[in-house]
Image (cartoon, rainbow, N blue to C red):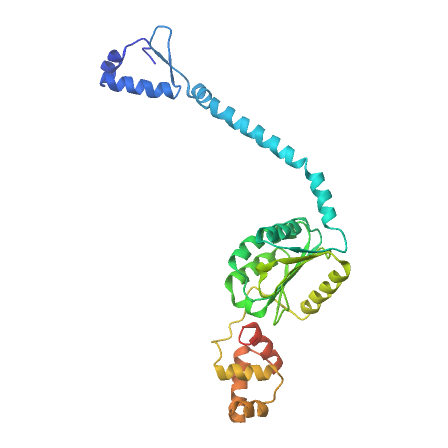
Length: 309
């Protein structure tokens, strides 16, 4: 300021302002630490850098205190790692089968297994399309697991191929290294971690009823063979599926079901009450729409499209 000892009236006269307005602006600048009282009784200007240091000092002290408190809490929690690992190793003892109830407990167990697995995750997921909530929660866990170098194999049902969120999920984690296949029928939901722990529902009809956590080697061996049995019969889940025309009519669907059962055209015609010529025409049309070279291939592609189950 060029005239630090001027009164409000003098400054107002110089600036062409009302004295009350000068007083208000002086107060505002003082609150921002941009003005301070001079020994002569007026105001002197303060550099913006010094004002910032003065004004923000309390907030910086508060941030530092919070950071110190967070660091202390983190250190206290990390100090419990040894006890946690010891308790987890006791829980992981061989030969144990444990029933977990309550959705929060189930999520906690699965989250713990997913975050600590080192080598592999194998999943049977019946029911067709995945719920979008499940996709949102599974995706970051799966990507983190893959980033640690673990293998992920997921087997879905063919009908999941037509569900766009499931297809996007499959594409995302496949790009990160996961293997996704589909099949027709799956016996139960099943998750196997590191071939050392498996999770399956207590009731396949009511997954909220609880899960069984299995660490028994004999049971785990059976569950692993069950997974491999279905996995080897699955088809690769590609990011882009062929477009095979509109949904079949009920008659076409009935023909497909009987074709898939290995029935000949004459038998199909007899069972459906139509002429063999009509069946032959329907079969030819379906083969063409599905881009199939054989009746078996047509049945597989129809199942993949969700036309038959």
